[in-house]
Amino acid sequence: MTPQPKDMEAPRLFGTNGVRGVVNTSEMDSAFALRLGQAIGTYMRGPVMIGTDARASGQMIKSACAAGLMATGCDVLDCGVVPTPTIQFAVKNNKVAGGIMITASHNPPEFNGIKCIDPDGTEMARQNEEKIERIFHDKSFARADWSSLGVTRPYTTSIDEYLDAIIGLVDAQAIRKAGLRVAVDCSNGAASNVTPKMLERLGVKYVTLNADPNGAFPGHNSEPTPENTKDIVGLVKAGGFDFGFVHDGDADRTIFIDDTGRYLYGDRSLALCAYHACKKNKGGLVVTSVGSSMCVEDATKMTGGDILYTMVGSPIVAREMIKHNAVFGGEENGGLIFPELQHCRDGAMSGAKILEIVAHHGKLSDQMDKIPWYSQYKVKTKCPNDRKQEIMSKLAASAKGDRLDTTDGVKIFSKKSWVLVRPSGTEPIFRVFSEAPTMEDAKKLAEDYKTEVERLLKE
Image (cartoon, rainbow, N blue to C red; front, side):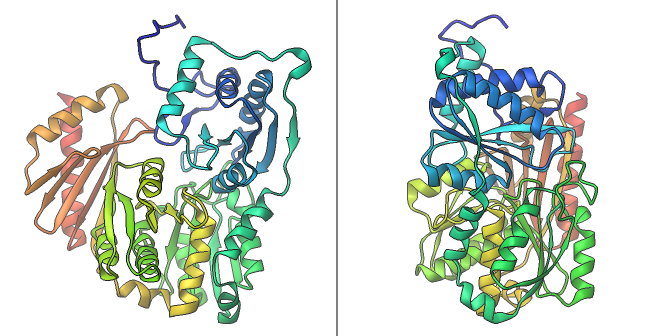
């Protein structure tokens, strides 16, 4: 690649959650991972924590990336197969230069990705990613002398340290006394190595599904959507469990199923935890993205809290939480952020917190029914990355509604409903979210705008 003039912006590598691509293509092969590792090491200049989810390509990408790090003189602390929030906690807890998580989260098994973590454990800030991109494109890599090359060492205590912190932040005694019984689906992902251990330590009886790490995701795709969670919904309905929950592939997100077998979209657990965080703190600020349900704002205001909406992306939400000292935050996809532990989405902490809420306050279904319900519908449609901005501009120009919000994507409000059309930061697609008083209205709203995107693409 021809080096760019210094005054030109380097082409973007990092999306909403790291760099992702199909394995063994030019967008995510060992040569790419090696060079990116060199760029990251040149930027970080110190010990780096690294881990992978359960994907089959994890070892290859991790080894190449680690080789790049060591070439710059960085030591690499290998945590093995662990959830993303485990790596983030290890980075913060050990005060290292940064971290790398090899994961493609909910993407299909042929994908993998490289996500960078800042020294405070948060997902890397965009301005720091830009510095790495500049080094990558300029090939201005640091090169350590043969006598000062980095080394890789196993770091085997990250899971125990992470679980110690979680258990220390919830009422473990109340959970143990409650005699709870839950079902958990680990999605053949990194949660398999963590969540069962957490439940055992909290004295919770449990049944697992897909609790063996397997990068082919034989149980179901790693995104915890309604169509991928039918087995655990059926299990909860049939088995008399207090509730069930399912993680995504790298266990930074969790979706819950209540004791009646209702699948709860992520903003339901977001709303419930916001309610209890504001109640505990006698108010406070909750931060979430523009895609979240109106129920989150309702729950926050029920206990005297305030709400702040941001662009989509957990790093954006986390940094606004830090800036404003928020008591809670997260996204509508099941990514909940508990600032008392760390400013990142945390699947295991989410499970522990819901256990605490149920132990203190009773059935999850009863807790949910205290918060207003809305019907939601979510679809997606393909769109080449190079046409996303054009389509967004045309949608904004032609939008019809009571109010238009372009904080992130195009969000159109109409009476007691809204629709959000937003380009994905990790895939060549548009995501269309809608909310309305009835499912019929929500579905029509989303499908209408999906059709409109597809019509504009054909022009």
